[in-house]
Length: 399
Image (tube, rainbow, N blue to C red; front, top):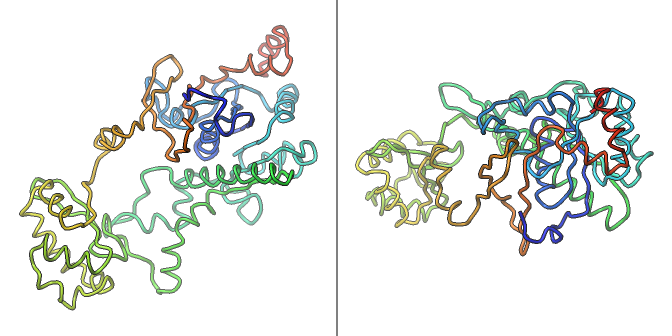
């Protein structure tokens, strides 16, 4: 946690979020990292269903621990009149409202952008949906892998033996990032013009932006980039090769100067520099199989460490193909102090990564991950509810 919380750039901003799973919590966690007060509204009796995705982090979900530090959790039954009254009281004091409810649910609850603008003109509403709040798929459910499929991303991943999903929740992450940047833009707009503008992000359109390059390639090239495993579809050589010790090393050549250096200093075959099969990037892609055979043969003569040392000397970008254990022990993260301890429900602490965008003179907040409803009493107390009133709401299962 920062030594000077009053210096966090979003201090004084209050965010109310009816959120679950990944996309919306990822956006609001980043706001919390920068000092915003994030009030996470959860269901009584269980809360965000991402809490139960797994139990690997000292009994807590790895997803939930990642996405929900520094937040306050309040449980509310939003189907009850009393629960809706409390939500309205929270929104009246909020700067931002984020929701990723099921298709159409926000509008039915009077929580759509237009309805909120009438009741809370200074509130910035942010909707995170699957395919947008309008259009032919507005009422269609969307989850990360479904969106990976719909954008064509799955057809680009994998290898000649078949397609594969991206190994992280990439559609959710993309949408969360755009929601975060959209909210920051809306806060800036409100501060400079006084106008509170709504933010809308869909998983589909967020990931659609990320597949724009292969989309251009396909539209104007007549065929989509092939699945090439760790190889690059449109650049060669760019991929992983197995060294004599069985470890994979990835290298990439970006221009003709690097190609010459690879031939002369790594492959030790200077005659290849002038070989017409490999003269340009397009030529090397067209003759990828022949090029890969040459590189693969050279790698069988070297250990992974020897190969990387020679590539470094030649000025060729390269990296060992890490597994997650390798990543966790990465010397860059350790040397740059990117791990900080965060408390999780039950009292244990786990290492968490500092947000990747460093702001000069600002240390981000990495507060505790809340238990479901952990802050319900304090939040309601802040709204003026007495202990007796809170006990009554709990007896009525509103909280």
